[in-house]
Image (cartoon, rainbow, N blue to C red; front, side):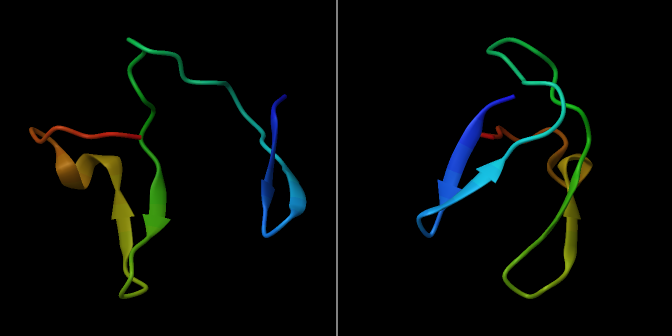
Length: 49
């Protein structure tokens, strides 16, 4: 698994790595208004993950 840092603290990434050309699995994140947003929310629009 890859490791990144967030505010100079190591964060371990879990799960399968998504490569160029792979179909991204659906996921849920929280937007700036603390509302859940899924990848499906942007269906039909260009996305950069």
